[in-house]
Length: 324
Image (cartoon, rainbow, N blue to C red; front, top):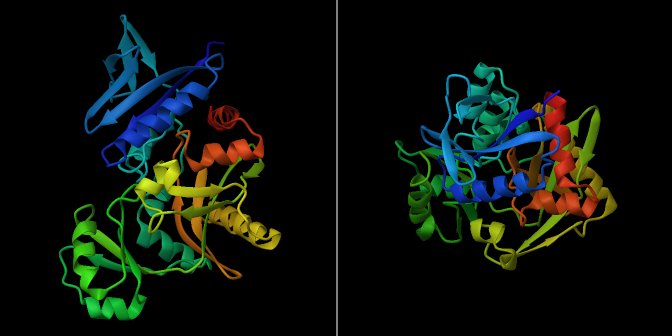
């Protein structure tokens, strides 16, 4: 039987376009080409192209195929590594659902929930998961900053509610800086969340479940050298210390992994996800859930897999095979 045609889908319409390309190239380099026929697909708006040896072939969106040398190639599986719109908010997943093409990420519903930070924290709170309980503000509505600050306190974080990475985020220490932080966040998204500053140790925990197995990676301790773990710290290895495994007690580590696994089940996740949060004394506070985590060589998940002694290419292969 011939190998299945696998598309690694990168790009997207968010500020993380270049990061997505790096993630996709890393995945392309580690996937076993003897197991699959692997193609790189770049998306930008309505421009969808298959990239082969620096040449581009347009994607037929009617059936997600392309034609090369007069031969039509049908894609059997989509490995989505777009961070942000449309790969992390459910839009692309909805398209593949209609095309009846399996894909690597969570469902359309799960993606839509997790991409909207306010909706996700509210949903998890209702299920007993401790979160930051942010305040949601809309661009078209007036807001009372004194009332907001009274609710969340200072310092606080102002963030775009639905933006892929750590863009447009401000740590506000003084009420005089609040309006400027809101202006920056609203430049990225029409909805903004304001959340209390959490004093604790930052963690991230990756996991996936496949073939009846539950694999939870070592918990990473994140020590940013910047004011907080912003975009620069996320992708510049000199801007943060990422300790794998983190310097947490065995009890706290077990609790983080248990909560992360519970979140996976509550949201009915699929593929690899990453749960971010803080350890505050003996308490755990969940910040957000990443359903298409970065896969660059400097990203958390590849480092977690390496620390666990599992080949990332093998993990991705297992996830793909589960759905084919």
